[in-house]
Length: 224
Length: 152
Image (cartoon, rainbow over all chains, first blue to last red; front, side, top):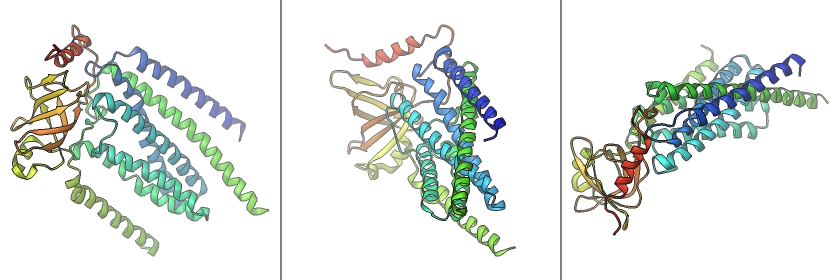
């Protein structure tokens, strides 16, 4: 890795760590608890940022996949692959935090309403994406198949977003989209969204560097 | 148009059609998470004994709760129709009169909804307690619900 690259990585990592500390402190300690739900509402400062970052990650997978199919350049594929792994991570975190939030408020860890079901499908689509990559031996062919899944899988995101409007659900409509959050609670939420986005950027840069090294290693092995 | 592009376009159209069907056709039926009290009334005898979810507002003044037996009774309303609900167990913290709830269970022959699970539906609004509005006061209201029939 180039010197400049590692310095940028360090800056990004420190920025993410600092933003997370400030964001979580503001959200979990400083901000007042919600009038109706009480302390348990603070799970929002984890649940909402992780799902938005998961959406961002899969949007990047979509862009990387389109870029790869159009240009067949390895870099696009490395980007899509790295972002898919992070998207799976953040989707799993969203579902876990949502379940922990659901139990004390709704009275259930899980229920098969449209919002939760379509989010579970999102996780399965991209787990399938990663399994497909691992299963296809020919790497260029694997990358091509994965790109198709990466583009089609993205279609689930607008469905998830609209699920609470299209169908009757237990999950409430989007608070952010409706501006239904008091500024006192909204500010820490945006802090955390920013912090998790920085964390995503840092992890993505790391994972892409790893992807490039993997590709280089494969190339050298083939040359031997 | 190159054959490869045509293949992609065709594939894309097939996938889009399938998704469209899933969303607006087939899934529409099964994705009805709950029925309203009005819809339940329209089903009449047909609904008896079937596993169902009903969603609505917990009617103000309708909640009866016995903490000794854990027997809970209330009416769920959508403003047009209302259905009497019976349940044995502790409702979730956010369950309260004038708030949304979804109940899972079956309708008995006498028209009472026997719920095996009570789910509280909360709004998308989040705000700190207002001036003079103590969150403990809300909690107190919930406590009074719990102590409606004090243990003797």
